[in-house]
Image 1: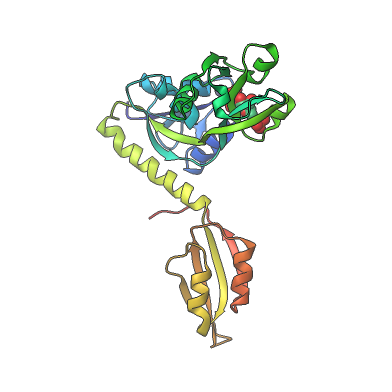
Image 2: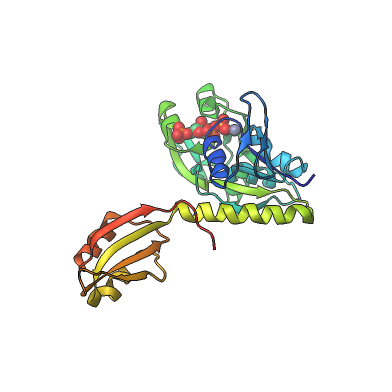
Length: 292
Ligand code: PRP
Ligand code: ZN
């Protein structure tokens, strides 16, 4: 069938942003709360809502063409020795967290070397042991599916390797973050077997829309009035701007209106510098869509 199937997390840290991103690409789904399968209405892309940990397997088995999942989860499967490659098509930038080593507050473990020969509880044993091996540390992995943070207190591990986002979970369990092993964010992955050529055209269209949404998310449209003789300086002060448009101002021949798309974050400091260079009536507005 000439439809693309995308696996996303059913409920959890990535669910809302994953769905929102696809909706921003113009996709609408006929959904029912309890069903795991959402049918694409105006565009032939359907969703499968599953546990995030199952997404790599679903792609490897060819059940879905695409999947949105944390890089940590995809890499765990790769490091387990899976030979086929899950191709990361796009880093989506949200769901940022880090895979860190943490130890009990008064453990006496303070360096990576101290972990040599220790037991480390984690849901990511393959990734953790390979990242540790790269740093010359060999430790024993205790694999737990969840609640990893209680393992040291139970006496089944000396340390943990777990995802940290705000650090609240670690603090609540009197654990201290000792070292960051890996920085992760959500990414779009493709199944390893080539997508049939009929689907490829559809996939390319979806990716073009996705790129538009991702670019727009970090872009701003900036409008301002500038003295003609400061145009060069003002253009240089605009972060990531290409080819600004210039328009005459009827009321003031010495000044022009300048419009530009800034492809990098625009901070108050930028606006203050623009004002300092003579700009006035500075307006920054979000960009919703972008193509070409
Ligand atoms: C991670 C991790 C911790 C928590 C850390 O779980 O296992 O429990 O998040 O976040 P914090 O630093 O903000 O407290 P995750 O959300 O990935 O859930 P899952 O493992 O059940 O998918
Ligand atoms: Zn999970």
